[in-house]
Length: 97
Image (cartoon, rainbow, N blue to C red; front, top):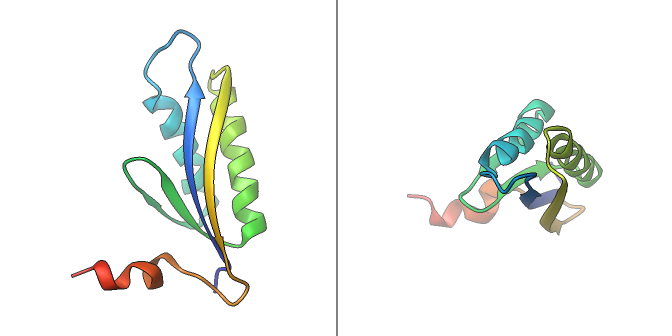
């Protein structure tokens, strides 16, 4: 069972003040390529997995956004860590119909 949930909001600085969505899309592509379970929400994306792996993905996301042309990135993250296991489904099951 995964030991961590990590929610991230990527805030890229764009070179000419253009729309940030293509940069955020690039960051989400990094998550998709990683193979971890994830859920995209309106203001952040949550990933589920091993904490070390998730932190590595955060690093890759930041690098990918800069490689895409961003002049800098702010990443706001929240982490839920439990060595015995944690899952998005378990934490949200009572809210699903």
